[in-house]
Image 1 (cartoon, rainbow, N blue to C red):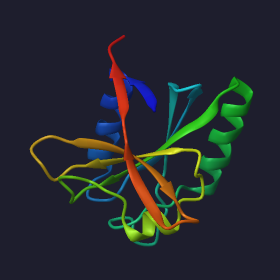
Image 2: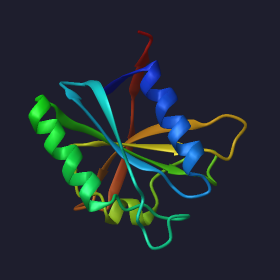
Image 3: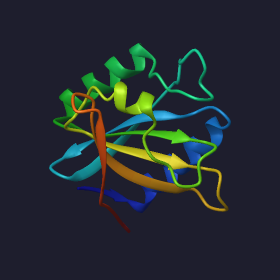
Image 4: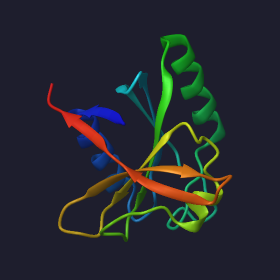
Length: 137
């Protein structure tokens, strides 16, 4: 499970809305199960409206900052702008290279943005929904 603070959730939703109609993407670093920092990334996918690919330089910079800060990669987030109840796509499962991370997917098509959390196994070609917590700070 991962624990975000309410500011993290608000920032992720704002980034997803700003990127729409393209998908947004980013990393979440922290310790244990507690998120401490968001790392928004530029989506450089060939068709960013239906896929995401983090800009390599953004990804490397975030990983370096996490190492320097003593953080671990806790989660990867991205949006599905046309989904009301987001779930991993076949592409999401095929490209899930970080099995230890939780994948947060934000759906923007409903009256309110919705975020769901998943464990995705690229090796097993499957996903399971998991719980996450949001706390006020």
